[in-house]
Length: 333
Image (tube, rainbow, N blue to C red):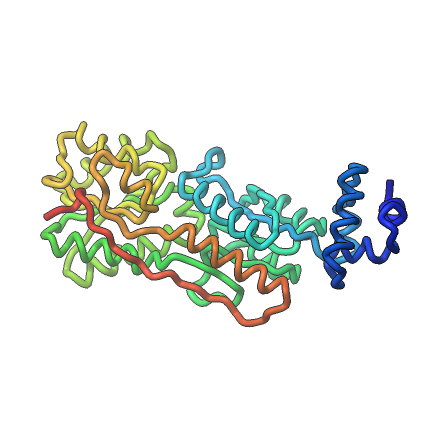
């Protein structure tokens, strides 16, 4: 069965069936329902590729989200994916997922050239990111969740990592902590120039210097067992550590237990502050003081901006979400 058969059974023209499927021209609700009923009864499913070629659109977005450790998505990444899929579905778009790692551009290249998508969401941006440069050259609509340089010209939505880490430093200093350590992302991400890691490290040291203090930054693997080795390294380098700030969400669940096993009580001996989504903070053995990472809002704003760009809106989108510190038991004075 093809579109001509549907038209004959519904008693309408081929063009009317086409308009009912594409929505390009208004037709009466009664006619549309008759066409859809014929299609349901006959089991007819329009060819998506053919529709895309005719209309120039696919109603599909792609989300490029590399696993944090090349194997596993973090809890925060899963929250981001869920929020993006929901936001797209609310606007009648599907989302195609791709790992699209920075060092393997084949996946991004296929998304750009295969004409299966209308736009691209790029995540986990590096300060110098070849995926962004390639997508810019293609002319395909895209939005970056994160950003490369400090003043990028493309559309982006990001968390203010600089402000978030500075808020954590100020909070810990205000409650009397002086020996601070930043738990960063993995050594591989830090050396690759991952934007959040670079900005967080810079903000940590600059804010401490503003208070006349010095601190240590430690790279930590992105997995659930890394906190044990991380705490061991912290205590070797800063035995009298009394404040820890973490931006590494994968290692976060094990941080308080690792400190406890090492004889450090939270918050009496060591206060802990993190940049993380609320569920991760509230699920810790000692609820963690956090600068909330608004993942759902980031995804919503990014999807909304991308679809607007696909539909021809030309205003630049530069969204930097402000930090909000929520004090919990891990840093009670």
